[in-house]
Amino acid sequence: IYKIKKRNFTLLQTLTENRSYVNDVKFSNNGEILATASADKTVKFYKKEISKYHLIKTMYFDEDVESIDFSEDGNFIAI
Image (cartoon, rainbow, N blue to C red; front, side):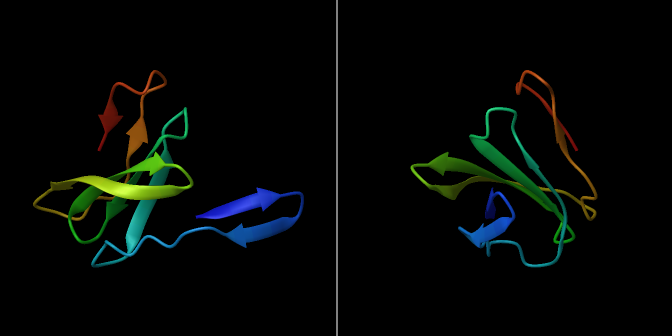
């Protein structure tokens, strides 16, 4: 996760919980939740606490997960 300020990119955090490459990453509209879709057949949800994102839930699937998206109101996620 990088912070962008003007033309400078500062690394804030590296998420290391996925066991294979990540196909998609989405932030919720309020920036409080981050979700990853991975070739390790998981969707992982992270919650922002202070200045870091912490893993709060992992969903398991039978196949690689290609993409994810939050609804505008943040109440649903399409996988």
